[in-house]
Length: 233
Image 1 (cartoon, rainbow, N blue to C red):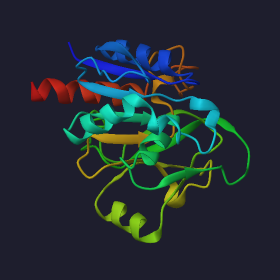
Image 2: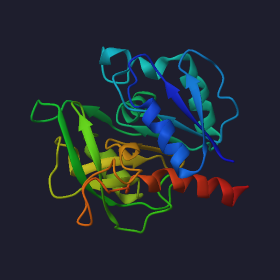
Image 3: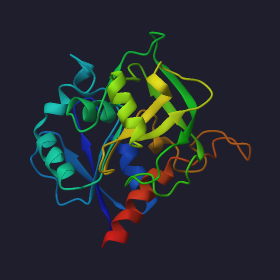
């Protein structure tokens, strides 16, 4: 069975949700601790959402220097799939595993909503279960979710297909070019601002035309990496 590690940092609040999503997708969740230098031989890694270290300095800045992040960076360099969700996305940019950065929402307020997205890249380790240009809805909750990068970087990641998901309908935080998630050039490291772990089980996800709280669009991020691991076994 595929084993997916979920790292807990001081201030993480969606680590248990991420573990639950991993289990529902059909893999074994493995709890990892920020202060350890041990990934327990996991096949993939999730950096969950929350407020690591109270979001002091910048969101994700201190967490990116936690002991386990040296091992995460090394694993990513070897091709191990890594997914950063919200605060985890911020960690990945701070650790320079992903281009760009995240800043305070342009309207200055925390936002929590079900967000429409378009899947732009299905060739990553975390998006292979989706169709190209597929529209999905998963929850979004952030206060510093505005994606930024200089024009040269934006042109490069657009040209090289490194935009993974893009906001549709409404840009909720001022992210440049409506970017909601990006990948590295290898496709094994992905950061997304919305929360797929909150849309993996009917009865607990976003509303759909079929029924209230029935949305499970987030499940594809977790099944994708399992399918990738099985294909490479």
